Length: 202
Image 1 (cartoon, rainbow, N blue to C red):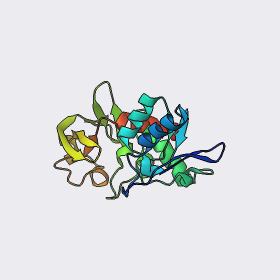
Image 2: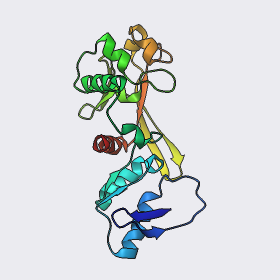
Image 3: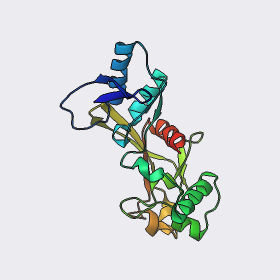
Image 4: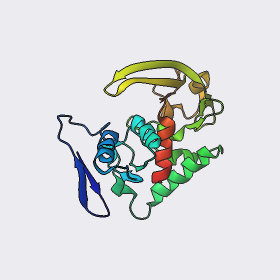
């Protein structure tokens, strides 16, 4: 792990360890920087391997503004003007965020996940009601809560959805693995911090 002052091109902190992943190693390195030079940087940037919800929360607590692309996404992809397809996707997502009824063309432009279904980013979270709104306009309430053990601690998450409307929705084939059970969307306590980071990167 290496921390560099980007203005001066100087290595200000380094560490060697046996962890194969970068996730969870950003804020500990920044704490080492604080011990070495007596203060934290105002801003920091890193690649997507460091992007983790708990790290976003710690960065905010430390008062450091972070710039990290979404996990698994190459920041180079954001350089230059968007392609026509990317522009259509961005417009469709913005229409969904505004609560507009999406046209067939906008629905077709929404991003898809690895299974060919509407990506989670197409589902808009309503913090006041604590529920998601699907691309077709249906409300997905809390369905269940679960937790699992991760390297950084206990991960808690809420699952939203499982509504009956999915079974008769004309867009179910684009959205649900099993329309009879309905679409579900997961959310953990750090999702709000991730969205703040996405908005900043945008």
